Amino acid sequence: MSVFASADVEDLSAAGLIGPLSSNGTRRVHKRRLNSSSDEENSHLPLTPISSTSSFSVTEMYATIPELLDSLATLKYLGFTDTAANQIWDRWSNWPSTPPGRFGVDPDGEIEFTDVAVGHLRGFRDQDTWDENDRSWFDFMDLCGINLEVQTAIMDPIYKRIRLTESCYFWIKDTIELRYRGLEAIQRASRERTMATTRVTSRTGYSSPDRHDRSSIGGPSGSAQITPSQESGQRSISGTMRMAPGISSDSAFSNACRSAQNIPGSIILYRGLDQARLNAFFDDSGAIVGWQDMLSSPPTDFLRSQAGFYFTVHRDIAETYACYAKRRDPVQSVVIVQVIVPNHKIECLSSTQLQKTYWPSEEWKKLVWHCRNQKKFPSQLQKYKQALLIIGTIATKPNKVYKNMDTFAQIDETCVLKTKDGRNGVQYVFNGDEGQEFLEDLAPGSVTVHPVSGMEFTQWQREHDFDN
Image (cartoon, rainbow, N blue to C red; front, side):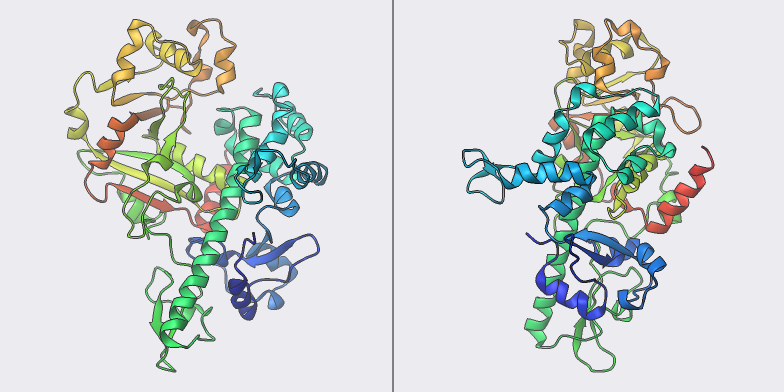
């Protein structure tokens, strides 16, 4: 299936914002015509047609996107070398006729394209590394057939603190899935543009030639909307993409967003992630309906066998996670989720509903060790299974590190995630259905999702690069 709808390609071609299909199965597309937030995110880039753009500026203003979602070009886009991509594509193309079939290709297909891509990595998993020595990471990525661009992104020293929370295999897999979600978001936005155009032309019988002109945007936010044409009196549709419902018009580093950090009587929780992961988080009206998109699967620091909602009180940690996703997939939109929780909502929780545990207590070590190893809780830890909310120190390092420990006593301070200024990171973990009900019961507007603009990301990287 094509990433871009054919009618959308026609419109973008007419505006000069998409290039011809290349022999390697890719197209150059203007960065403001990608996913549903790309126009806002990249509003600093002029909508210059590709034919009028210098070769230097094309790299800055245009992204190279696979023509087909499940293709050899996509495997290379996801991060594989030519050799590895060809091996995976050969397996996908010559899939056996016996079940399970390929999802989207074979009747009753059960195997996703990304399953086959990730399956290629599993053959090397026993050689995975989480060593602080960067060389071992590069060697493992070479073994897995990961190209230099993705290797460089994963190993960017700005993000080493976050990278070492997991293993090399984890980040390769996460990057592949991240990039594929990004392509799916581009595909959805392309079809949305086509449907919006169809609705306008069916109502008016007229399609404005200036539909890709930013002057047709109504309002300061740059949201795509139908506006009366000042010259013709007809109605036209802006070619910009509508900001996804529920996404705040205040960017993550705006003054309005930052001012929310100082609300008397409340604690502010944060989480940074790619926007595509929140595809079903909001309905068309912007109401939150898909809390499951925010769940973290077990085993995690404080949850042995249940999924939970993890947030941090440290904005800098959330910023680093969001920007690390952007660094590994430059065309992906990333966001910072902010949750405003009144202190009284936490204070009124019972001693059973609320538990707290911090480094360097023995109980914190026991909880992390038992959860990460998915071991049965001793009686001392049973209270955490019943808790609605657990507040405590954030652990770092992948699960395999804890599996290699004979006892919880081997956990030391290197297993504690630090903030930029060296403090112990603190997280709020909401457990299961009861935790979701707590979050859903917050006042309207307490949960907001703020996009990171392209200029904000660039500035953040520049500021943090000085630290290395």
